Image (cartoon, rainbow, N blue to C red; front, side, top):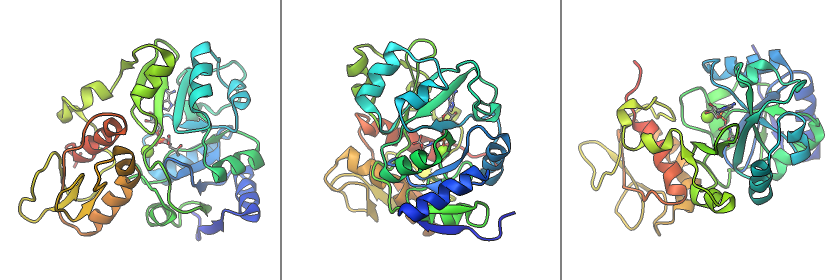
Length: 315
Ligand code: TXA
Ligand code: MG
């Protein structure tokens, strides 16, 4: 039990302190361009166990190892030509690659949940990069929210969800992309494992090939099969044109609503506002209706998150 959670400023002193806490096996939430991550030393079983514990996350769900560079990633995974093409195009940035683990990788098996693959990402955010450079090792980091709840896009979200349960929060304002990274599996045929901050269309253009669709293809057609995730407390209703009953309306485009993801109908702007908007409307305690959002570019990732937020909950 950690009695207080330090607030660290994202200056050289704060970053040095954060790296030091990571070296002690403690947990630090830090800003990335996608969402805030809850970081721990990916080589330390006890640090990774503490991540699962702080989030209340089922331990079969593997984590992303954040590294400073392609060279750093290559120490842990078996690299490939396709990995190089995608890294050239999108790293540093909101793309995670799942590749076969290398022998002698030193990554805790709790990070991979026993799989023989590892998810790796080189984040673009200057604070995340500075922290990784200072720590000089792989940082396992899921989104810094209690398991199943809305992802955090600012330090206040992190404090509200995990304050008192982690050593520190490295605050660097709101996240720019606002949606988690896109995850592409390259251990077998290139597969979209999670839509996110880099659009499917962009990835297919770089690979000059279609990606296999793992979850996302099924998600929107079969919402009943979705695991509830990213869930506000109140029910969420999608593709709403108007409010029903007591609902608040989360709008998109030129509509009359309580909060607009993007009045000009820009999916990239909407992505950056999504989680903060859900956090805010959640505070109203009322059911949330959401305008239809086109499924192109980052719209696919937004709809993936919204479908999960609207999915039936375990009681
Ligand atoms: O943008 C992001 O990716 C953020 C920031 C903090 O970097 N992180 C993030 O982590 O979203 P998390 O733990 O919330 O989501 C990681 C996802 C999980 O859905 C997990 O199942 C998948 O990555 N994953 C991790 N390792 C995997 C593997 N070896 N094979 C397949 N999926 C994997
Ligand atoms: Mg998450």
